[in-house]
Length: 151
Image 1 (tube, rainbow, N blue to C red):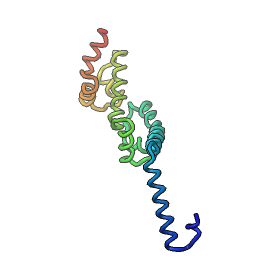
Image 2 (cartoon, rainbow, N blue to C red):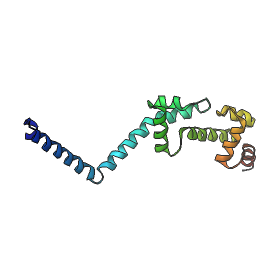
Image 3 (cartoon, rainbow, N blue to C red):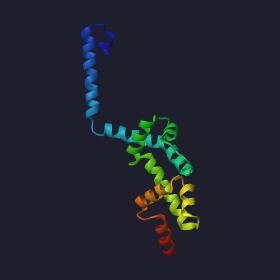
């Protein structure tokens, strides 16, 4: 602290070197950076929680990355990066999973047409719905409905 009070070039160099030494000690302390990372990840998950809630409530509507990023108070590119890092998949992929789960529920519990279910769960293209459904579930919606009735 005495270095800070002296207005000499050598005192400034000594102060800077001690600060660098402090940063080195902080960075080399085991667990110190890990705990910070965990708390940062935890905060990021909390920041993204309203996005998950929004997707659950509005999955049947047209949802864009820009809307989701705005809810998280982030730029679109930063939002996409954070979402994927925290949840292991992209926001649109997560949205489609929510839509497919909802479609599965409707296929099991209603006799509504498959096209109505596709449109009501947020898919605006029947062939895209069939493709997404087959990719996620492993069969086409018609097959899923038949197998769930037999179960």
